[in-house]
Image (cartoon, rainbow, N blue to C red; front, side, top):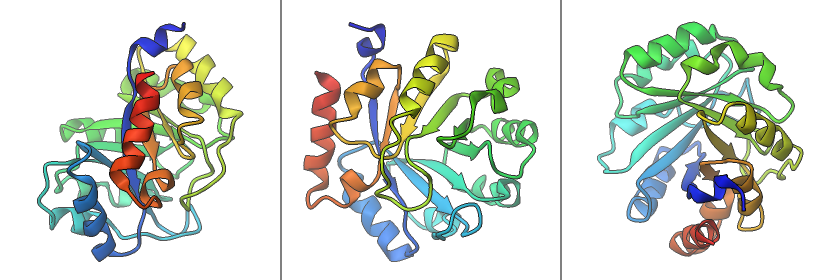
Length: 219
């Protein structure tokens, strides 16, 4: 039994929507079942689809749930200041975006928030090695980013395994294609946080879907 299994992974539902009404509806349906929600923000440039801007919608909602903000945008530095006026406390920035990573990591920390860097399935860890001592998390995309419901990219498992062996103190998140079938494989290689979009959001019963994932985590 691998040591990674000693630390139970957290299940975090993901919301990706272009509707402010749908956003609030989903938060209300999730808030009694989880303590944190992952908000996917897309600009239609970095990825083909476009979502709500997000910061206005979050400002207008009162909830005990905490928010992760996953910025799937070409130029995250153009919007990050807007986000600092919200209650969001964790931000995830793509290594592939057009941004000074050192600068935006510093800005996020200066504003009392935590930051993770995100790698698409094809992106090598070498791209962000110089920043690993400055971040709180790393998020591996286990699908190609954009729309929910993408196919799980199994090759990323080996990449996560190698990363966790080299950097065991950095918390690892896996995002995309998270189902009860793949959860054990990800836990075995050191994943601490599992972001699940379509498996939960497209289910008929959010509570049941979340519990199904949690039951696998507990085994």
